[in-house]
Amino acid sequence: MAGPRQETERAVRKGIRSSLVGIVVNLFFAFTKCIVGIVGHSFALIADGIESFSDVVSSSVVALGLWFAIKPPDQDHPYGHGKAEPIAAIVVSLALLAAGIAIAVESIAEIQTPHRLPESYTLVVLVGVVVIKVVLSRYVGSVGNDIESTAVKADAWHHLSDAITSAFAFVGITIALLTKNPTADDWAALCASPVILFNGFRQLKAPVREILDTAPPVDMELNVRRVAEKVAGVAGLDKCYLRKVGFQYYVDLHVRVDGRISVTAGHQIAHEVKNSILAAYPRIAEVLVHIEPTRGARY
Image (cartoon, rainbow, N blue to C red; front, side, top):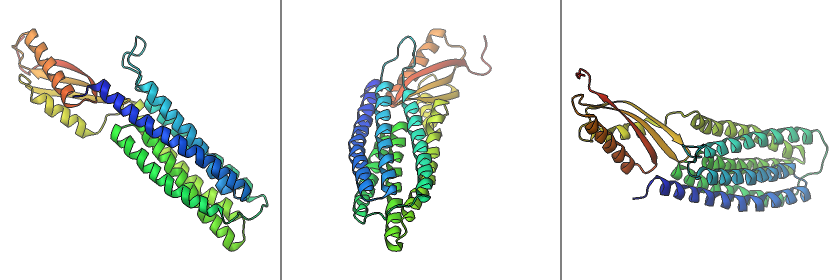
């Protein structure tokens, strides 16, 4: 059975692989959309290309954060470097917010500036972008859910935001060509901005909660309690706290035992509780067990 270290390394390798796929795809799309947008006179497509460049940066940040998170504990970081992973997620979310604001500002400027109608062939590029980016978002999102990575999940939303801006651009260019009104293209880019901002704020919550050591889902605590209660000598449980650090979890557990047993026996029960939990959940890196005598025990 894989231990916490091996399980974390597996998750990191999988997360970095998904980030590298995103970097390659986004680089191709960023150059393609910007070039076609300039030649085809579509600011919505240019804005979409800029958003793809931000995706390249965000995927690079995710890969770097995952690589740093796997570093083992040292004297200055006794709990390891797992917090680098939610920090990377925060950076990605902030980049998403910055992209949304930048697109809104530039769209307003373009609406006020006379320019030519976009070319119809820009629609072909956008159809391809929407399809591929939706598929990429689903792939990266499934990896993020599998390895429980807030950074990878945020990266998946960044890919989805690119698909959203491309969809808005497609609608805007279509309306511009039908109505002969070139500003419809710019209005489409402006309409995509609130969607991007909403997703940015939405994705920012999860890593911030993790940085603040917010308790994980109740189901995990209940499962840890069930494992501990099955250990021989455990009379009951009091407090059970869990917190997520990168890809791993840390548990603080208060276990009640018969107050008449020796310190050595109580110590042995604590070790058995710890080993049972670690064996049941490879993603748990450490279990701190505090032994308490049963109520009414004599001293």
